[in-house]
Image 1 (cartoon, rainbow, N blue to C red):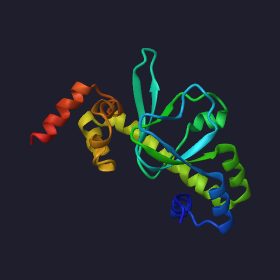
Image 2 (cartoon, rainbow, N blue to C red):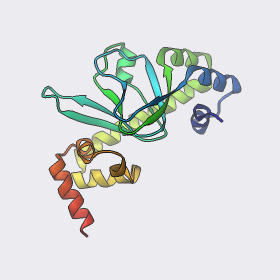
Image 3 (cartoon, rainbow, N blue to C red):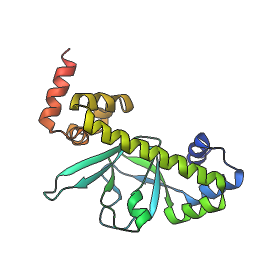
Image 4 (cartoon, rainbow, N blue to C red):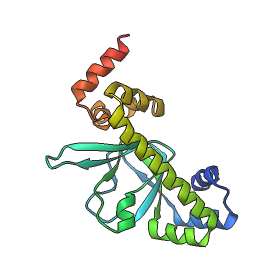
Amino acid sequence: MSSVKKYASSIVKLSDEAIKDLENLFSLKKYKKGEIIDAAGKTPKNTFLLIEGIARSYTLDKKGKEHIRSIFIPISVFCSLTSLLLKTPATSTYACITDCTVFEGNWDTFILLTKKHHDIALLHIKNLESAFINIERRVNSLSTLNATERYLELKKVAPDIEKHIPLYQVAAYLNITPIQFSRIRKALYSK
């Protein structure tokens, strides 16, 4: 069973024809650690299904400082949704934290498939719902939790995150400085 079929079938029941169309749409790509999957500043064309590795989305402020918006672990769907919908240049870059394996598919073709197959439309709705929930949780986390609580939440989702990415990137995701992150880790692990 392909990863595309496995992922999609875990969310909604798909017809054999819908599965075949999805498998024809998505192609397997391998990216190296640090490689850009989709760059800010260009109008994106694709959506991605991460099946191996860890990826991130980030923006740069006016001073060139990175702000990590999301960290993706398998199995995750990601794309520059606003840019795909509005056909505008992306404001975020999607990059590999580790070597990554993704399925990559053309967004416009995927949308055509949602019109052809009701079950793919349901899959799309479920993916959009999941994305909205994740964004809302992230905003709420940044608004209501302190840095230690945000770190502990991240550890629930990705327990070994520090083994895979530099600590400064974890700090950036938590929206704190590396020094603050060091103090949090010291306080937690000295207990």
